[in-house]
Length: 407
Length: 160
Image (cartoon, rainbow over all chains, first blue to last red; front, top):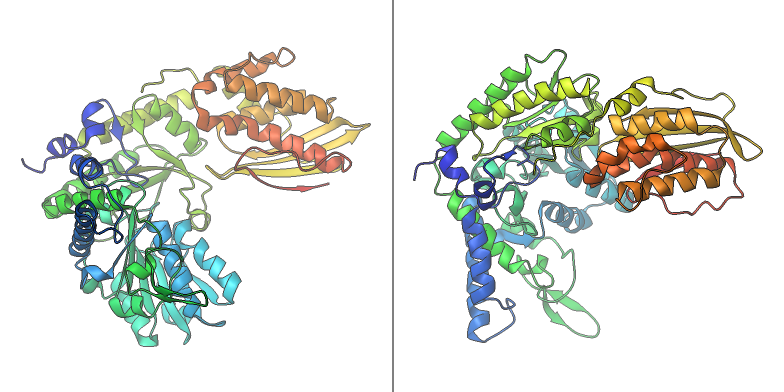
């Protein structure tokens, strides 16, 4: 079966069952692929047991499936080994894990750089660390087009920067981050680099070694897998130097009444029963993604993005947030946010919903970015591989109706 | 999936556009600011009390049509009410939105929000100005209990 949007759409049970639905909110949650759903059901009905605990055959089958899921995630990221993959409840948990575990190795006066463009999940944990430990937190500003302004990067880093934690791709503007420039600057001062890949992963497999970063976080529900599972990838040597975040079963080497010692990564960071079936479902989604022709998919996503941006440009007064004329591989992922004067995003999305268009309106958990762009809220359309021209045409027609209905 | 409702009735648009009570009070005795973290709607509500009743009311509302219409309705109707009366109307409105009651008899205009019943995520938009007014009244009447529950998720600060 070729990777046309229609063929891809048919592989998503919810979309296949709702042909009238124009789902344009994949930046919030992508739809789950049939293979991921089937993998979850198969595991829960044939191999359900706890992992790393039992010696019976069922438990060993669960162990094997869970560790194979780790290998799939490692291949998806081109990680050095599966041992660098930590399963978490989601990207937010992955980011909080680093903020606590890596953060506990920092001293007052050490500096962490984030950016104004971060989702709150990669902003608030660092503010909390600052308030706990006295680190300095410096935000990288954004330019008028929402892209990170790296002109003062070295100055912001100073000589005590220990970590740069930034988004790979904005969940509001779709703007890609210039990762290479950040990594080069970070290496000069010995700082590590964490990428929040939550928005990037649904647009294709990643290569953490080629990017030469130290940590990478993403969620399963953003890349056609189940909810409740995410990944933290960390370089083996970086993970090895970090203490655990959560304590509990599975993460220890030995517990005595007096003290505990820790298991090696990744188990050190997987206290308690992990999201086993979800990890296996995520692996099925990632395995499926790795079979696709991403060059063709990105070209189609780019074309839809351009179709949308050109259509939006015909709406009087509409303000497009983020890069104005850009292609996927250069400046913008297919995430398009906009503001129409005198029309509130909530009202726009309400009218669109009545036309079977699912979009998000609000601040998108990125209030610092919206403030920097001079907006309180915006409407966001996010395009994924199962979207087609009909979705964009429906959205543009829907916006015409919203403008008439809300005027 | 297609709600097909008529949520954006003329009455809502007219109240929102009229923006009754929009502005600030120089002699405010109580003030509250409430945000809806979901969408960033913001209401700053001010009151001046006379013998425990609202002598003047003003608000600055940045939000959707539903939020602005509700704030405008308060700006037009709330003068003369005391805290208990406002809370009673707010409770009746909440029940109406949940489908458990008709529009409050004393405030028939609130029937314009009946179509919002089908959209639970929008109930807070309608209720936010009422909750801000209740908080502003509490700020103006320090003897009134200040720990009454607020709408889940709304964030606030008050000055009296």
